[in-house]
Amino acid sequence: MKLTQFLKRYDTEQKCIDFFKTHREVQGICCLKCESKSLRWISTIRSWTCNKCSYRLGLRKGTVMENSKLPYRIWLSVLYFMVLTKKGFSATEMQALLGHNRYEPIWLMMHKIRIQMGERDKRYQLDGFVELDEAFFAGHRKKGVDDTGKPFKEIDRNEKVLVAVSTTDTHSRFLKMTVVKSLSKKDVAYEAPKILQKSATVMTDGRRCYSPLKDIAKEHQVKIIKDKKLVCEAFPWVHIAISNAKKKIKGIHHHVKNEYMQNYLDEYAYKYNRRFFKHLIFDRLIIAATTIAWFNMV
Ligand SMILES: [Zn+2]
Image (cartoon, rainbow, N blue to C red; front, side, top):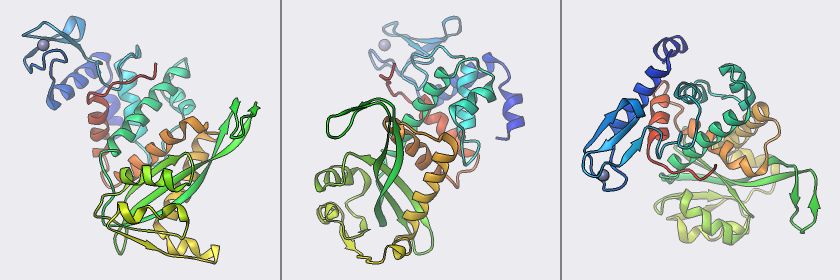
């Protein structure tokens, strides 16, 4: 949907409420107490009421908007803007676009949406031929305790990320980026089944931490590259993904706190995996955002 169409179609709070209501009903609503599908809409309280047990299901209940007091129009706009461009926006830019007077609620809602993007992609594992490599994404921590237990005020620390791209002979298909505690055999063995299907053929470099993959994927191919300059040629798609993700995250968000790195990677991967959807990506994000998913962030 073009920006002009969007602004014209959803120019009032009521139109946005109707939009979310219709979307939830199309997906199918159900009483969270007795699981009955017979509910009636009561517009004055923006809730459905169960015809069997009188349970009230609020319009925001269970969705990405739960616990938020921000208007539906703001939510719909943020969902729209987050997938409007390939690059995306920082919370500061989004706040300016919306003309909202507070930064924190916009920042929080964007992270909730990123988490939901990640949850959506967790449903799928990569199949076919998969390039897998590790990457180090620059993160920033303001206060805390370092790996040796010493307290610090500010530190730049790289996050270790497993990056996997399923490919064909001519192009890349799907991407997964997962922050890991360490590049140990134990952590690779724990994360790899969430990344790969058992039927996948995975190719890595000669790092020892990848040895558990032989028991997780159908086939584990190892390509040992002694000349570091040739690594990008050996694993072309995964290195293009790493390079582009780093550029985008640094270019838009500058200093990313380590604890939120996975969320930014989830946004990048979600958009990468739906890069051919064009305008349909907005519809898909709405489905993800209005699907029942409980949040415990606030
Ligand atoms: Zn009920």
